[in-house]
Image 1 (cartoon, one colour):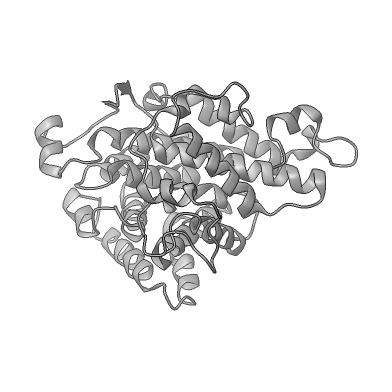
Image 2: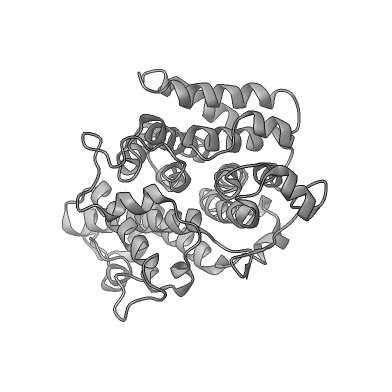
Length: 357
């Protein structure tokens, strides 16, 4: 049985693996993928953007989501007040800076913003860019890009499920942070459902069981029909046996949030092992890196880091960075006493690493 720390590491590293697997084929049709890589499609990590096994915007934004959650926790226990959506908004605005310049500034805001690997621009989503470029933070009452339901919000939402929270709290924060960039109900509710599923898996549920639970929560949402239908179709399809590219494509292309989440759930539930799940999640016509990333989050959270292909992890760009951030999240959530003084305030070193703002 994987430990909680194993699941957190597995979730973040699994997402990065799926992202890297799909990076080179994100904009290719299934026919083009098979023509380039053989009848089975991509069978392992390849190169894209001039880098082998690269991280793309999916993993970049996920890492900044983690950083925002750590900083919100540090601020809350050190200053007595914190508004997590605002802190996560600030983290995503730091990601925006990485897409606007080629290297870290002389005085980066926090340690994550000092990492050169994150300054690569790898097909960031237009809604993510435009939502974060706004002068005001999107809120449920005044969401950014109210017509956008692309997968750019759900793809970064696994970290909301990695806290020691009830799935409802993970749902709420995921939705509040999704509308920073994606205001369509299907975009934000898919993010909420994903946060719920990951939280449920961290508490020990299987992916299918967690998804059924999320469907129960979606039933309370008047605008949840698209996400409900997509997830219901994914679970029904998973009963037909191991995943195939044709069945994946029956769920959509993954460019929109509910399709990306459905493809990820289908592959995670139907595949016999993580390697098969990740390959099924990327070998289709559509947003391969996002569907791969979401699937990797799911299988890694369910089975732990030890279940992920070790040969792939050894090749992954930024492996140490992702693993370190996962370890830091576990420290803040589960072992905050080790980075605190006698009254629970973050130590100076920890506060410098994760400034409470």
